[in-house]
Image (cartoon, rainbow, N blue to C red; front, side):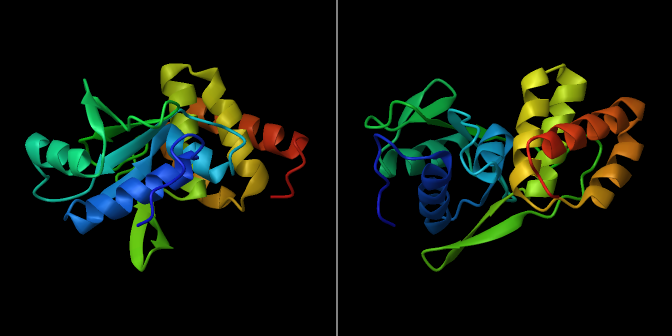
Length: 189
């Protein structure tokens, strides 16, 4: 895959590059977290990092992951990986099961990139993910991120509300808040 313009690449461009290159090396990933919010908000939100969940069993060893990242030009900086020409974004890997709140039945969305499929959480699941951080970690900015996503995507609100019921009363209130914010920003969703 062609390298992105390191000095100005978006989360989406960096994600596509890293995900494709890792997949070529047998390492499957799923884009999650703030980077998924950046992608689904179409750049209205910038996360500053790429969160990739390792989605392989057995998972690659730390050495195999590190070696793969070194092969594609990244340097290990603690638990992060940075490309020496990219000052504004870094990559972080998550070793956990794919879940949002109490929901472990997440089906990643796929994007076709250079005749390969890369995976990330859907816009609807990204709204749920941001609401999870808002409610459970009291991260107000995540409510705003969820609203940015909802304002520019068709969200499956029935799915969000069904999920919120299982998460509890605070999550139901958060869903109402994000819908109001998204509508106030001009969303027709």
